[in-house]
Figure 1 (spheres, rainbow, N blue to C red):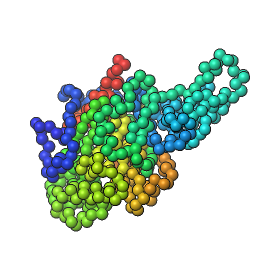
Figure 2: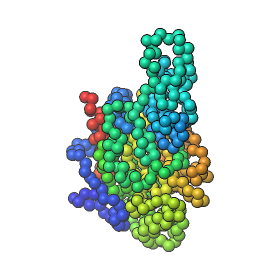
Figure 3: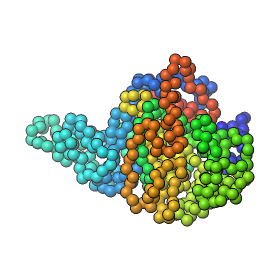
Figure 4: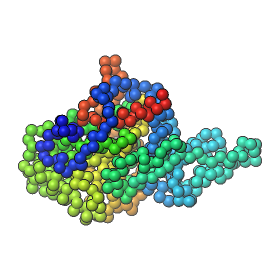
Length: 456
């Protein structure tokens, strides 16, 4: 629960001493904001169109990694709703984002996810453009009336900015800069040095429910005790710490290295805690009956491990070293940050269907030549993945809904969430009711409503 002097959190294990202090500088949401009675936002096709016009076309969206356009001529594509974009590094070494559309008759220029090109050539009539977006050639140009092509049409460009090794794009020419959009949340995130990380995993699945149903599940830990029995045996699912950074950006810090306070026995280790301890090279037997000491021991071990593996943890608090830092970048990104690596979840809308979305899971890792180097096990990086930084980028893997591979916790949520989408359509459902443990949903929808109401 959030820190509140009128409703103090019960801290049974001294967890909050090593957690950052939450800033509950929320806008005055009012008690009525605890009930989101307009659940058509999850089910209506009208909302799909309104979101496209008011939200997706007005916000900064995470498109991919700078490392995927490392060389001049490298490119990758990014699909969002009805649009597709080409992100490329031009011969002038500048990274740009172009709408993936031919200026002749609207054909899509590029149909693969990653590649290298000296020019973008339309596969329909072979018009071509340089990697800086300027027109290179028009096939049989002499057959066109001069008035039709006198503007020498270049590729349409979207705004493009870089932060933390990520490429962000924005379709709104009048939007403020990315730094302003992200705001203060960059502070704690910069400590992890995302720009130094490599791609270790890249999975995508189409899910049969609305993108917000998916996102909502990863902005709260209230469901962990019911859906993730293994998880609550190694985390405190009650004493989260919450921060709100403006613009809909928020975080919840998930304490690791102890079990849920829902268990009556506060001293005994669980099998999951033993695995957590031994995964770091410590002996679980040294902590039997001493659950309170696990966090201190793990923090010390991880800092030593970081020095041995060349990972700078000097910029990280003790909480950042041990805990799962769950950060939400408005509107559709969740980052689970650890010193070793980062789990990125991106929730993309379907172009027309409110009952579908695209779920991307990308894992980043620091690189190391040391044998046995790995990211947290729950990220489910395939066994044998080379994290030395010398191997090719892993290919993107496409999964069908219900296929395993995202990781145990993520697969458990994917299995259940279709029932939520179905229930939201029930005549008997009277509105989403939120508790304090779901406060980040309240905060998100306060910002969401600002965008949705801006055009009214």
